[in-house]
Amino acid sequence: MNKHILAFAALFGLLLVPLAARQAAPDKEELKLQLPKPMFIGTPTNIKSANLEVVTGKPREPFYVPKGTKLLSLNRPVKSSDMQPVIGELSMVTDGEKDGGDGYFVELGPGKQWIQIDLGASCALHAILAWHYHSQARVYRDVVVQVSDDKDFLKGVTTVFNNDHDNTSGLGVGRNKEYIETSEGRLFDPKGARGRYVRFYSSGNTTNDLNHYVEVEVYGTPLS
Image 1: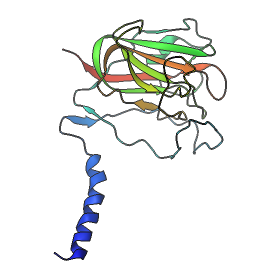
Image 2: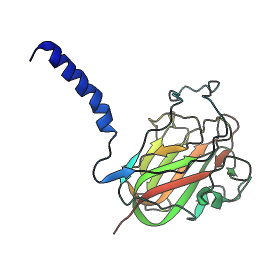
Image 3: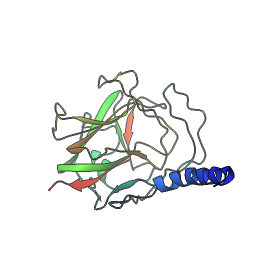
Image 4: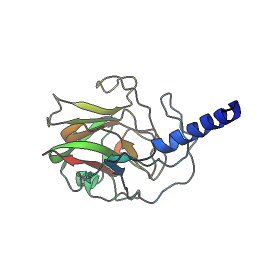
């Protein structure tokens, strides 16, 4: 085989690798999501942060989960560090409504706050999505996502995401990047972490020092 054929074969192989990587494994399927209508168009360029991820403006690629994965969080109870929200009700976090307009989000007080969803039983978690607020471009500060079977999060805690790069929340230094809120929501990969409770922390945003949630969706499989 001459060198030209070998070079072509190598190039063809390289082209195939990314395509193959996007194929679902036999025991997985694409997670189908119902996204809300976008509230703003274009890629925001006026938000500055030392820890902000690169904005590509591209839609999220398909995400694959084990077959049989279900939405576990719909209408599940929610508690919070702020049990008397400034606007809205905590039940809005899991009511299935993801519209970005007024009347569809709960607003918590300033500074560090958290919400916690009770799934009712310990489950293997395969995807977590969150919409803090998507009617305008914002970055929420010190976002931390944790899973545990302990309702007080004192033991057996798995941290799924942490972009608190300077540990202002006291939960440890995070290695993840800050991100701009969009109608796609943010997908966190819990990689099968097990737990009954899912807790979200944040500490204000680039527009004000308040905390908001339009919806959180937790996908997984019950443990037998």
